[in-house]
Amino acid sequence: MENENKFGFVNFAETWNGRLAMLGFIIGIATEYITGQGILSQIGLM
Image (tube, rainbow, N blue to C red; front, side, top):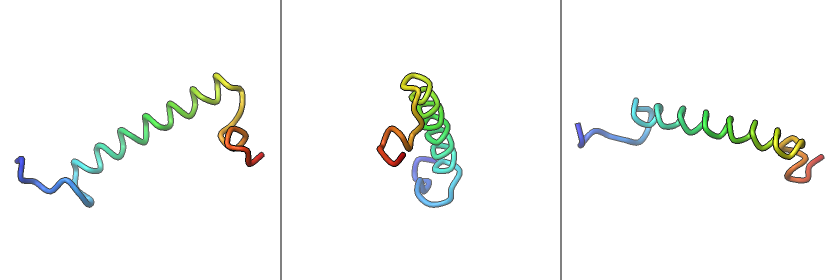
């Protein structure tokens, strides 16, 4: 089990990719709520 490939389209990598995407989404929503600005406004594009 420990010699299993952890890169590419394998379950391990896809699971962590999904978890980190959900975390990033929640952080983005919280940042918008706290600052009152969208992501584009925060980085100066709008």
